[in-house]
Length: 245
Image (cartoon, rainbow, N blue to C red; front, side, top):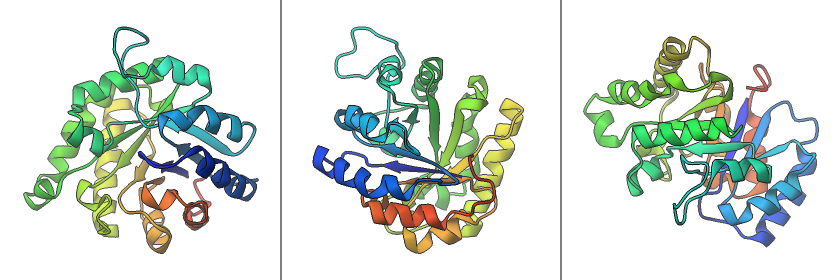
C-alpha cells in the first residue's frame, strides 16, 4: 500500500527534524510505500533527512512548464533534480481555491511525469454533487483527462470534498463504490490497473476499516499526518497484503 502524508501549509524546519527523528526508525523494514509531502520550503531539508530511508519525499503541486516566466511557480524538473520523487496534483483545495481545472491538472501531471516524478492525481465530488446524485458523473469527467498519462507513474486519490477536514468520513460502502468506478475507468483509459488511494479525514481511529475496504490501495492523509505517532499508527493499520502499491 501507499501512505502519503500531505502537510498542506503546516510545519517548520524544527518540526520536520523532530518528525523524521521519530518516524524514520519506525519505518525500517516497512512493507508499504510511505511518502512525505511537506510545504515547498521544507523540501530540501526533507530530502536530506530522508536520504537512504524508507520515506520518500513528494511535493504538493508543480507547474506545467519546465521553466519560464512564471513568477511564484515551481518547476517539476527542479523538484526532480532536488531529489523529490512524488507530487500531488489537483488536490481539491487547489481546484476550489486556486482555479485548478481538469485541463490544467492534466498539464501539470504530464510535466511531472516527463520530469521523472510519480503523480498522485486527486479526484472527488463536492457535497452538492453527491447530494445531487452526480458523484459518478463527476468522477467520469475528472478521470477522462488521464488517458494520456503513464500508468506506471500514476496513483489516483479519491477524496470526497465533503469529507476533507470536516471530521466526517465516507462510509466503507461509499468508498468501495467510488473506488470500483475509478478502477474500471482507469482500466478503460490506460489498459492497466492503477492504484487508488482514499483521502478524506483518515485518522488512526478509522484507518483500519478504510484501508481494508475493497479497492483501496492506501491513503492520502492530511491533518492526521502532522504528528509522527498518528501517521505511524495509520501506517500500522494498513493491511500488508498488496504492499508496495
